[in-house]
Length: 432
Image 1 (tube, rainbow, N blue to C red):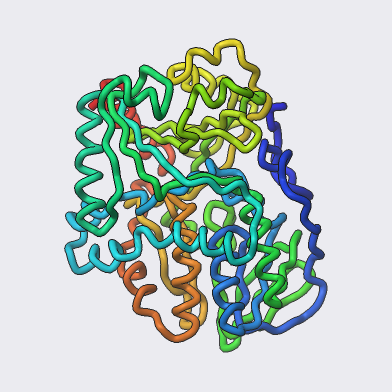
Image 2: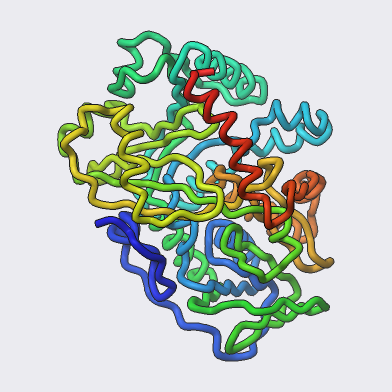
């Protein structure tokens, strides 16, 4: 199948929805209730924060407009990739060592949070270790050398650079790449099943989740009041964790971010051919500005994604957009069927750094992972919980990052950003 629409009554059509573990459909909020913390959004940020708060004994409520993991958390590439959308050297050049240093100490922690949660709560999400960064040209390979040195500088050993054709094919069976950087602490998993497992973990700790529950207003005050279409939550604290699906709930957050689409396809099951394509069974992403990423699923499909659409694109175009990129990497898949295609939105910021802060003394937010959200959302969930419990030191390290508006405002942010991306796309095609 090719996904053709988003459906708020269930999960967005995708391979992940097709292969999701059984999960209860939770009721909408119909009453007026109270909580220590009310979290708006049932994706990774909200679930990660909710678990950390519930583990500390706080009364947690999550309000989700559709279903747990309906947005990017249930549709992404499923790859554990460290750091942020801008690596720490760029952050240091832009904002100085004092800003970069505390962020650098946290840039590998999100992966640890994921693995700890999977182990502690026995989450069935096909988690596997191992990640690969790839370069399509010798000039791009220099970027891998620099990344290796940078990460080792910040205490991340164990990286291996592979730069001979024979060695490359032992890890990824393609002639497209000049070099690979192997990271054994990377990894991949079924993203929707991770979200569903985290939701069950939160509920096992006494947390409550309401689905099909649209928040229409957040009233400032102590306590704050979060109003839905049919109920309300009075809470000591509120966390806004909607990312690209925030709509117009908080205009101040919408003004400095932009939803962008990315697309993925999943082949038919490949059997033994899957092991020939990626003998290492690691996940892979290249180091282009507009990158490709891929991995094998538990049932031996190739899941291949890439590209950025500034604004929106009809999902019916997914197959024609991504299949040519897949064949550049693996021409041996020319006659293989594509059974699933889907799209989803991530939230882009002008700086490509996440936006973290407060809307009032007791209303917190995190958004704008800029395509690098799997590890960051799990990290920031823990950091948000620390702040609500009284230690905002790590929260402050992110909150001090500037939030820049897009040139031209909401009306012109899409064309201006797309024009800028054309420059980087040309550089990618030239291998520079």
